[in-house]
Image 1 (spheres, helix red, strand yellow):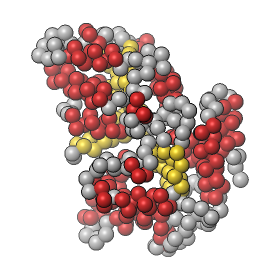
Image 2 (cartoon, one colour):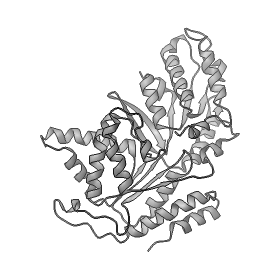
Image 3 (cartoon, helix red, strand yellow):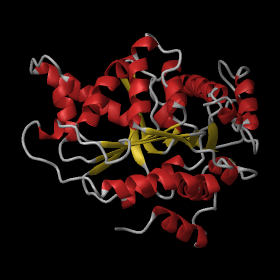
Image 4 (cartoon, helix red, strand yellow):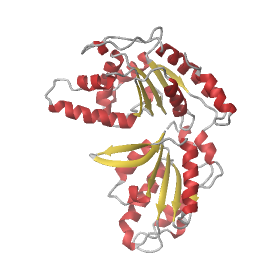
Length: 367
């Protein structure tokens, strides 16, 4: 039996790698209980349908749903659990990326003419898998909402243990979504099969790291890049992955992503023909954006400037924390060309978004 998660947490606190937080340590009690019970699971059975025989954890539910405000440490705790989970048959994935994989797999399964495409997709996911960890469960797409319930039913029936983090209580998933009444059985399934635990940590650690620290760096150059690299390493702990958002058949690619934080260049987001729907999808997926390489804009970059204005408006309205590098101060980024007068509002918003406590209200709004 491995070292208890609380002991590992306490060691990291003693080494200065983490700040002590009673709520985080309390959440680890739930995760430690789950980790210990995972050790008692039998080895996978063989046979085509053997994985789909009911195989619940002994004396408990089939996983954990950990929810709470952004920056409270949910992803860090789940990663600690995942790292020390006593099985190699495990996977950790961002929920949005997982659902994209599922949609693609369903598309391929339907090509074979099967009556129920979800069945082979669920079998493929559950094959040789005991533990599935999701980061940031959220349902914003009607297509996901319509399939996620049946998919999870089959995963639970296959004996897969599920741990997920979310900013919302299960009852608030897909809130006000289209045909939400069809989604309610999935909420009931989550509450029945997973232990629901709220992480009420004292501090928004991302906000705390940035409080009073510069978040706008100009001019462009090695010094600005070095500062951004330092901030990114501090926020992510050196971990990152790609995230691809699908919006109306298009893909918005975020090359660097971790736990609700994304890092992209100006040209990634404003050099491509993206629009308001794309930026709203971005706001729905991230709570903090590192945007690099904002250039001076003029009439030759009118389209890029227009997209930049739309992006900043979306980030501002969505209370997304912004850290960026730019060629000049906000007021000098777009001095001439159509829309330069209107750009004054964007410059003003960029200034406001540099405030030490800007963006802190998103948690208070329940996001």
